[in-house]
Image (cartoon, rainbow, N blue to C red; front, side, top):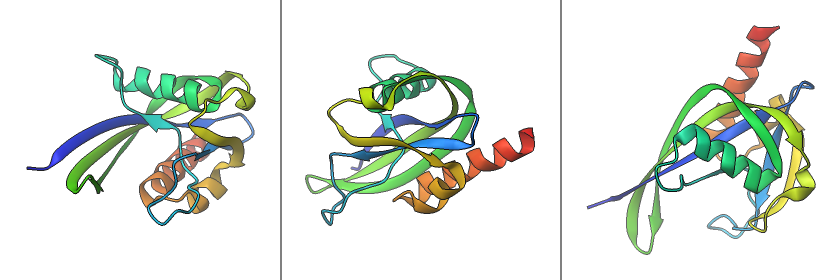
Length: 142
């Protein structure tokens, strides 16, 4: 029987069309650094949106507000020889306040990157898709 896991994360944007990306301390399976979006598991009965906001605050040092849900990324991975079905709900978030210098110990670096660049350069296809959705949403607002 496969295990299942749920996380929530965010594409945090500012008024310059940039998104926050992180380099987690945890490496990819091949040992390379990963360029990712902030995300993590809900605490207790925390809603997905609240989990996304908390994880963004912990992993990037900034406070944000939810604009809308962007979608879900679904994939499989192996943990201790078991297949795990993972679902990550992503939200479009708007930067409110805070400093990227205040990120937690699980993150090597947090930085702003043009949203279109993030849609090309994030390590995982599902996260690139979420950045592209956020960029398309931003263009439709103008």
